[in-house]
Length: 117
Image (cartoon, rainbow, N blue to C red):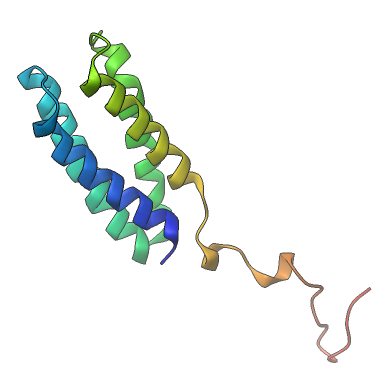
């Protein structure tokens, strides 16, 4: 489990909770709450299945763009959505440690046990 998945899970919880913290229209709150739940759940799935983190990439992009798509006024709720969307988008692009193979970090050993090169 990578730290980036925990960042996404925490951001999803914050997005969900902030739907009730910041004053906004009902449809804005619904978008924020539903997006937060989805980000949270997908972050936990991504801890087991690394490729599912790309769903959070799409959700992060949506959350960051939705204030512009819905033409929300520049208030705390829309600014929060934009910022959290950028955090989720960036964290979802960060590969987990297990995604980075040791082959790229060190020269491989040949079948005889000697280093190539």
